[in-house]
Length: 301
Image (tube, rainbow, N blue to C red; front, side):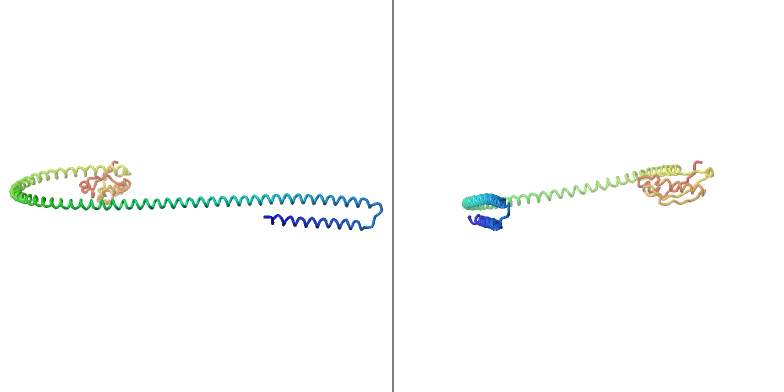
């Protein structure tokens, strides 16, 4: 503890001693010089002033060194105090850790004892439950055997009763089916004759309806062509017979001139192309009748 203070103090003393030695030598040199006329008094006075200043400087250095040593002593004392405080806290922490470890071990031992007691209680309960379950299983098996024997007896009696009832039912069912079959055949023959007559009538009516729809759509197609036709006075009284192949959406798959005036036919084909999809019935049987359609087109001029 004292060694850090001794080193700077020793260095300071050595430096001061050297400085004083230099001053002494300077005084001696000044004294050995031959006296100068009318200048001896100022030299002596200057030497005395220099020594006083040096002494003051030395005192200031000593005071500064003393203050520095005091500060170092205080810092060293503070470090020692902090070290003692740290050691005290470390010992407190070690003691706290020791106590906590003892408490943990105590709790662990208590938990282990509680677990062992609980395990023993569970084992005892499991043994008692197993014994009770075994006794209940034995009673269940005995009751099941008794019920099985009773069920077998009742089943045999019921089977005999059902067999006789089934024999009678089958006999009655056979007779009923024979009567129903005869009646069914007669009804089917009568119904077939009636349906044939109705179907013929419906087919004829539907055919008339389909043809009417074909005629109606033929008119609609001609109207679509007329809306897109570019007419010319030279077309008056002339016509074009053209065959169209139509897709279900009215798209013109193919068009072929059958006969007619070339100018009218060219204008008709151009009008068909300009019209795009032509009107077509969404009913399948009507479409089948008009998908290959031949129309005779006469321009309105």
